[in-house]
Amino acid sequence: MRLILFDVDGTLVDSQIHIVASMNAGFEALGLTPPTRAETLSIVGLSLPEAMARLAPDQNAEALTEAYKTAYVQLRDKHGENAVSPLYDGIAGVLNALHAEPETLLGVATGKSRRGLDHLIKTHDLARYFITRQDSDGHPSKPHPSMALQALRDAGLDTGVMVGDTTYDMEMGRSAGMATIAVSWGYHPVESLAPLADRVVHKVSDLHAAIDEVSK
Image (cartoon, one colour):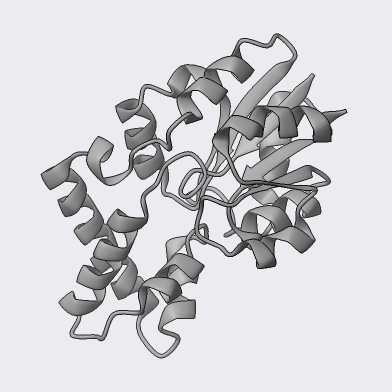
């Protein structure tokens, strides 16, 4: 048996436009200058309080978190989850193929809140795939290994594969004793991911094969 644990934003769904727009709106609502796009994408994967503390260490992280959440929900309600956080092309096929394997269990570990994760999973009809869902409501922020370790306990396994697009994903997986696969279509530069990953994958069509390779 093997557990394949996926990050969400930047790995399964392309939510960068939604995240950047929400961050800009949240900062502006408090009369603050928003971070640059690169700065915002650099914190994707962290829990919101940790992200805000890094982006604006001299500001009220709780107030920024609430302003971001409000903007995020407003944009999602206006445009719909499919529009603001679409699945990357080919991801549904990869999940289908892995899910069909009797020896493979799937899970997600994300910096999203439980409410946000549940909404996304419902919108994209993904619930049947994942036997474990770990989110920021019940754990310390990545790269702490808590989410990965709980996912392994849920699966009844000692190790597995972490698939993500950020250094936080790679560090979390390694700390939990998991193999790591970095995907280059997400939000952190490949040069920062490569030293932490057992494999770097550049195309969704190559992901399943890479998972098989590091699972041997």
